[in-house]
Image 1: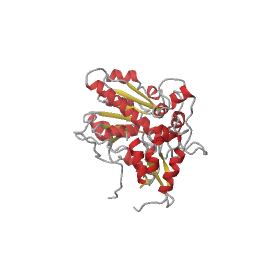
Image 2: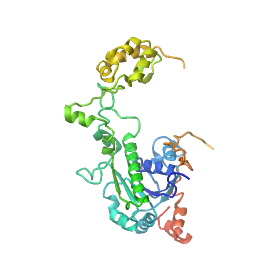
Image 3: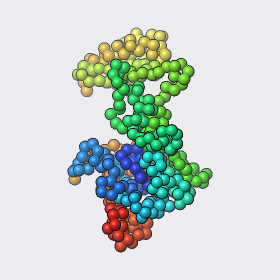
Image 4: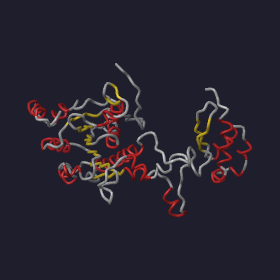
Length: 355
């Protein structure tokens, strides 16, 4: 048994935010049916580095998912989604707000079909408010959420993290919301609900104390390179071979042990550095002492590697059953489970409704 055995998830999403959230649920046992457009499918299939024409990212992002290639511009295609929704626990989408309604799959329709269904909606700025109709991108969410302003060196423009952090943060908030809603339904406390996740708000939610610092003190946290302002010592320090090492010795006992390790017991024993506020006031001095030590340096079929499943659960761990599927690989199986006959499925294929 896995943690989410018996949970059915429908994914109507592309690229990163909704697909990553669905992937996380699928890795812990949920049945994930990914609805893709005919012909090309999810654009992620062609993103970044390819293996025989398909993205390596795709194989990771879509593992454990079933691919149903479906024409959502057709009435019969929408009817298939409705049939799936009747037996689903979660539907995850990252279309622009209002797009699901235009397809005839708004919350009122889905909730009437299946009151226990949870609808997870991921967008740039949420389903309401003045920016709801603006297209959402992870990069913009990172900027508006504040993380880009605080990333990089003080004398350089705002930088980005080397991965799609904004989308991933939204995915994780989406999973949390989905699980909380599922818990409510499965314990008999109520029906399904809408989980509204915004890229910008997901980033904003991890920005620590920036809001109260500005509201009460007028303080704006600026870019600080590898350092963590107000917490010392914590920085990226140079090494003798031209590389860098990250050192964080910012708890009181660890700071003292770190100073002993680098031969600066005098700093470790200094009462002025016994607590973080004293260390933060002289972080440049401490960074200099650590850099002087760190630059001495110490000695020290086709298969590929992919990240494992996290978090690690002791009794119901996640599993990887297969890599990202080919486009429409599970169309036949999904439609057969819905009760369609061989001839009916073939007709849908012939008419370009499924693939």
